[in-house]
Length: 329
Image 1 (cartoon, rainbow, N blue to C red):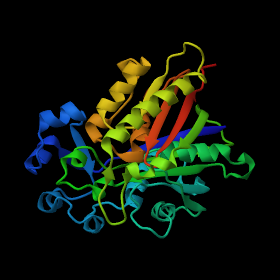
Image 2: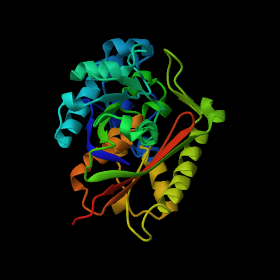
Image 3: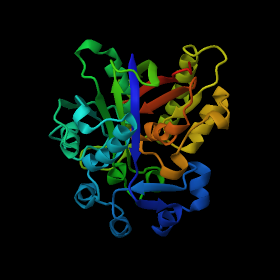
């Protein structure tokens, strides 16, 4: 079993409002955006003047002007996770990173994250797009516990706006940048345990969502939204079988857009009070979205709580988790 000792998140300071997108004159406005995706704001690691002047016509330039590297965002999220865990970088024995938009192709981004934090430990990348957080924990859950170091750091840095064409309203309204991080352990117990993990993929549909090298984000929006709703509801049905009968739980889904999440909750009978999300204020931040939601509610977790996390991503992939908070004794 895995134990979750601490989780953290980071969002860049620059805010992309719906008014900002309207002023880009790409055929969108506040009412259109809220009706379709329910997103008010997003954060970006790019200068707003750069977006106004270029609409990110050449995404290769976006990496050059970015105000934060993935490693810098990861270090900030990891700092929060480590503080909550009561640990320091010196306690970490393994670093795993995964990003939809790596800042470099070589070396492994986990190495740059470790260097930023001053961690001297094995590093590797494990990425499955927006389902990365769940996939990382599922893979760790399958590994031999006796061969693992006491504490492992996983990070999910996402600078997705670097790959967004801001002249295309269908994608410009969706995405924001963020990073999440988690400290987990096989051997050292914590109040939050990862009691269930599973994952899967449909490689035949791998071209439905892509970011070609040096190019913009592309997706078959209709097909991807249908997959996200269907797969998330199937995942929820599977996870409910693992929960105590009749026990309420918090639900966190992939932060694709508010419309998708509300449809899922309606079909699954999840009340709004049990649905945790942040997509309205931060947009779709890829693999960092769901764990950042958990991080924002970390202090609200109480003994006996259960959290069901259902993720979907390009690939097409999915990963699901159940977290349990230790009962009071």
